[in-house]
Amino acid sequence: MHLIDQQYTRAPFYGFRRMKIWLGEQGQLVNHKRIRRLMRLMGIEAIYPKPKLSQRNDEHKVYPYLLRGLSIDRPNQVWATDITYIRMRRGFVYLVAIMDWFSRYVLSWSVSVTMDVYFCLEALEKALAAGRPEIFNTDQGSQFTSREFTGRLLKADVRISMDGKGRAFDNIFIERLWRSVKYEEVYLKEYPDVRTCIQGLQHYFRFYNQERPHQALGYRTPLQVYLGRDK
Image (tube, rainbow, N blue to C red; front, top):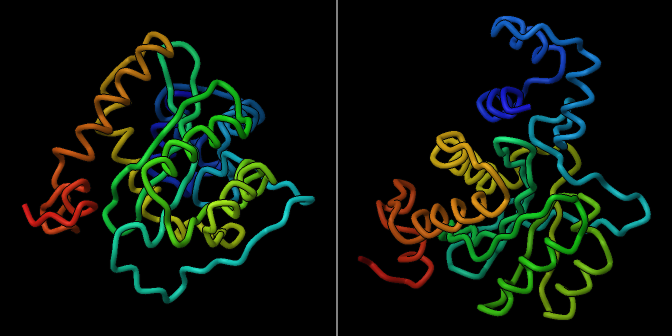
């Protein structure tokens, strides 16, 4: 699963057939049925070019995508969220993060060993305690289409936007965040347990927000841009 995660982050268009060939080249002769089962366990949807960690519930309301053609030019105009798989030495956890699109600032995050809605709500409450966006964008996963999650956004008078089904790049900045988290933190570490994983992520997100300059932000940090500081 660790190898699958690393290769999928590098080549997100890989499904289980291509993954089987690649694993074979690494000396891992694994049956394609097992690869497919493991990818489903990790939440990787083979037919989409992105991890679909939260599956859609057809009974939940799906909101339209509001960001197409929208000029995003200020903090707290659009927030976005997604879930990814984080490996440990033994086992894994799921990570959800909420990001301000304009500044790339990570407003909040949370981890869980299960894919329920509650760790997503925990991250949402943390973010809303610090501010409120005009629009909140998610994928169509059941956590984000749930009445608990959408109801909390509507209560805060936030407009809800959802990616088109199977559209990997509707939430592109979160996808780039996951790549940074994994290559700059997760893949360099071997977290022995959940506690160590949380400590490592705390350190990384502090670095990402406050110290790591972004070329797309004029080599400023996300925190500087979010707070409207030039330096």
